[in-house]
Image (tube, rainbow, N blue to C red; front, top):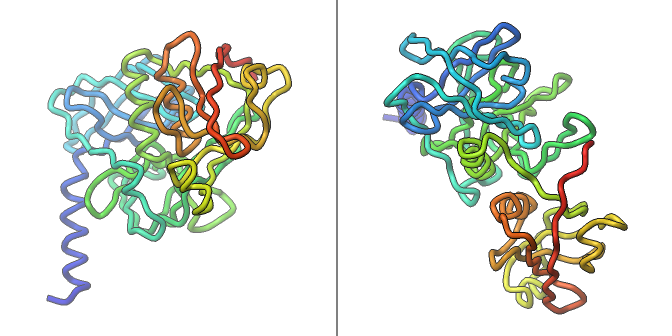
Length: 301
């Protein structure tokens, strides 16, 4: 058997195995795709898929069965939502760790674009940590870019690695471009989905900084003790961060004793930490400094 035939057979096997974990989501004002999150009926999808839906939606499974589902939680900031279906023994697709996603790796998008059920497209991870404009002046951050075809209706479906793991949740495409689609990383989806199932929302606390991910030069990485951090681009003049002494050009490397390598790490730790104050570890002018910050409620857009 030729390598091409072997690759084709393995790809076919992967899709066949993953397909039962992919569902179609339908309501009067739209449709999309979702993926099995837990065996007891929780489904993960995009927030924009169910944004205009009534309280319940219809979920169609790969075997043709249909179940009503309740929207139990939504988060517009990451464009993720969780539904609870009446299905038991739901096929679950595992979420990959952030380290498992690499530029150039082969990925497969599954979904229901334009109502064409169980469609499969194939491509590679084109880039990581992309940013797209979102609603109300916000943005979708830390996205995976792929050239696997993603069209309306694919939203909420899985972007799979060749190991069958979900590396991203397909979320957007550029209508004026070809071969440029985007997915929310599975590492983000994992913690957001957990909070949505428990609380129905992600309660974000406000530090008042603009920041970006940064790969550190080898000499700086050796001093800091890690290869990446979050660079503060700006701290609002009256923000909680500024009041605690955080300034532009500071490098955030930890929160509450946990390391921070990306903005997603920072957002996750802030969402999970319920302490009245948080300790932010920053690298400032060649030294590690701890800043104790009392976050505030995020102001309205």
